[in-house]
Amino acid sequence: MSATPILVPLDGSDTALTALPVATILGQIARATLRLLHVAGSIPPDAELLNRLQVLSQELEHATLDVRTGEPVEEILRCAEEIKPRGIVLCKHTAAAPSTTLGSTTTGVLGNASCPLVLVPPERGATPWHLQHILVPHDGTPRTSVGFRPAVELAERAKAELLVLHVVDVNATPGEPGSLAPSPYMDQPQHEWPAWTSEFVRRFASLCLLGQVHLRFRLAHGNPAREILRLAMEQSADLVVLAWRGELEASRAVVLKELVSGAQCPVMVIRT
Image 1 (cartoon, one colour):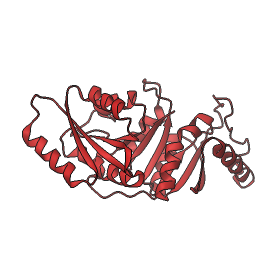
Image 2 (spheres, one colour; image 1 turned 60 degrees about the horizontal axis):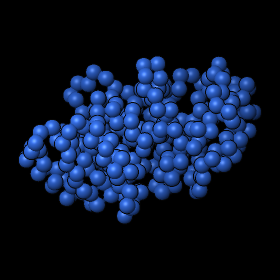
Image 3 (spheres, rainbow, N blue to C red; image 1 turned 90 degrees about the horizontal axis):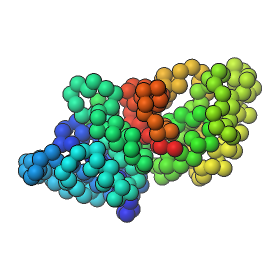
């Protein structure tokens, strides 16, 4: 097994356990152990809950349990800094009636963690999870290509298909040197799309080794978040991977917030 684990924060609720089927499969794919982390709100921790978590960690293959006391976000980030996990897998919220898209703990971890974060919708419950189709929205920028290295590695290990979606906004201007701008003739994809995809593969491969990954491409016009959600449903995506600049202010991360809010499958967020 890999010495680099996958961190799975659990707050003791049944809802938080919906992250485990996803974390388990990711661990098997990466040959990584699972580090279950519970941050207790009292000293000593609740004995009944602690026993339940210990039994759970023993039932899971290659899993260990870490119990700490303190503020959840701080302790999760401290643990991540210590063990340098391959990623953090957690339920996007565990409250019965959340008033926001993400719970406060998840928001705090998302805003400060440097490793990939997999946000699991609680609605999926304990249903077994598999990884066959990965949807990757791409804006054509070099930074996004570099950010997808973990996704490409995951797809290769899992022998999963990587479906790359490019949503065209003809009014947008490239904000990064070396960006691949959409063709001005995207309304005639039969002529321009093959050339664009060839150039994309050439640039993408120079920044992120593709190995034996099976790539497919889709082109869409309109609101990026809505098109991502539509294609994720249409193609039965098991995972959506989104590169993110790391800013959560009110006017930032619009696509991320809409996507996490509406996605019915886990979303991997990679800070670029």
